[in-house]
Length: 319
Image (cartoon, rainbow, N blue to C red):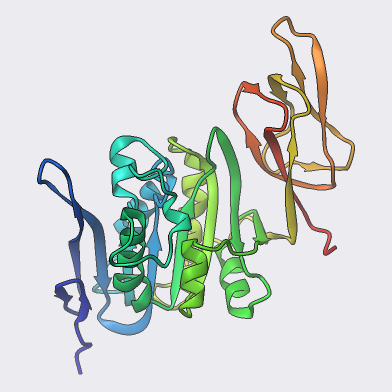
């Protein structure tokens, strides 16, 4: 018996087929329509329904390339289950080169949204009703923001056995037990019953190849674990380091930032990680680790103000 077609928006996708859709969001002042781009791969055989999305923030483009590469290697004729890919959630932000929407709202603080709410609320509602509500697993792709770069990492509820299993299968260097933020896609999706992994890796407005490759391989491993595709032949570089807490070291002086630590580097409390100097090179303050752990994020800004976040350290200490 043939598998039933998959309904999304005003369309139906038959088993063994792929289809690109444009789900209407709003209309510009010029009269042009703005739509949410979606690609559906509806496998011939039964399996889970999974979504993968990127660019919820308009300046975070690593995930767009990840989704392109994942889709290029999949065929609905051989795939099991259904994959919904949304490479650009914040369409207006990407178009204008902005992190947020034209109304300055953070889309990732606007979920689950409302059909009659703000522009952000309407996009969030559309994403929830047309994508998330149809799926059991989701992968939300992000990068660092505001001139920060992140080590490839999965942030998820590691106390949930199913989520932990998928996070471990992804195989990022670090998996961080992270609380959910109200209004985020991860929070709203989890409340609706979905299992969600949030990937962080790379810097905004950059195609960092190392972050793209880590995420592409991770997504493929998750799809393999779910039985949607054959598991990849290669094993992940190593098991993910589990971290339970994280926090930022902040600049204690205004000046020019010089960091000596790299992403993934292990540090001990008190280790020197860099310095803040004046324009003549005089050291004003040293940047020291406030805890032992792994560097999972760092600022790439040359100039910092006192109080700015400069190095993100995750701890493996359960406490």
